[in-house]
Structures are given as C-alpha cells and as structure tokens.
Image (cartoon, rainbow, N blue to C red; front, side, top):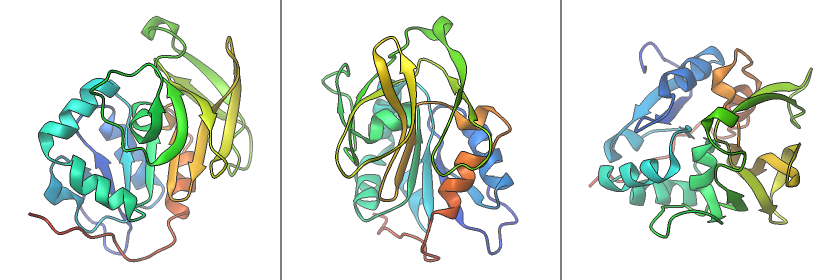
Length: 212
C-alpha cells in the first residue's frame, strides 16, 4: 500500500487487525491512496481514515498498546473523515450496551450499538440492503458477527436498515464526517460504500497532528 499516489487522497487504513488489504484494494479502486496506520507517526497528512472490522475488544487493546488512541481521538474531534465498518462502528459509538467495562470507544457518533447482535460466526449472513446515497441496485452486505445500531441521535442520518429478530435496526449511519456500517463492504466487488466515503471528503488539505 502507499505507492504511486501523486494527486490522490491519502486515506489511512488502521492496520492493527481486520481485513486491511481488502479495504486498501477497495480504496485504490475508487482512486484514493491507501496508507497503513500502525503507529502515531502514520497518522500524519491523512485526508481520511478507515477503521476496519475485527474483534472490537482486541482492537481496543491494540489501539491502546500502539499509542494511537490519543492522537487519533484528537484527529477525529478535529473533523477527520472516518469510515468504520463492523468493529470500527463499535469503536466510534457513543455507547456499547454489551461491551466490556475497559473497552475503548471514541464516542464520535451519537449511536448506541449492540455487539454480535446476530450471534456467533456461524450465524453470519449476506443480505441485499438499500443504502441512501448509493444509486443503483441494493448493496450486497456481508454481516459477520455483526453489531446493530440500537439508537441513533437526532444529528445522525440513518443510511440503511434491515429487519432483525429484534425488529428493524439501522446498519449504516452518517454523522458529519463519520460514516459507519455494521457490514463489511470490502468483502464484495461493489465499491459504492468506499466511493461514497471518498467522494464525500470535501477538503483537499490533509489533517495533520503534532507527532511526539
């Protein structure tokens, strides 16, 4: 990742856990320059960031041990555009109703989420989902130990919902520069979620942090 990108938006992919390579491929295919992010110095000069899926509690621990938490928290608060998928959604939520007490959350989006809402990995499934802002046919969404959004605040735009055993639940939302999906858009060849995220980045100027 990260070569031959003159004139392309530098979009970081948090590379601590999850399907980093698939997100990088998707970003490259929509014209962005994917940049792996493993340490604070990697956060410099980014126009946006993807927080991929994985195991949310493990990812929380890896974030803390990597030293990324504080600078990333500052960047998100300053308006860095972020796409969070599956575990990334959980990490960006205001509240995780069934999370561990020590689980990290950036609290960047006014949503309440439930982890593993559909059960274990054997209960993973695919579904056609209508996503606002994605013209054309429904998005084929891959749900793997997926969360759902139980509540969304007034500033949150619900982009997609599905019927679940718990009733209709949101599975994609946007609030300001933050977009989240409960599913894995990187695991199909449909690039509309990544394209929507990249095309929505308004500023040509990268976000910068002071690296200590």
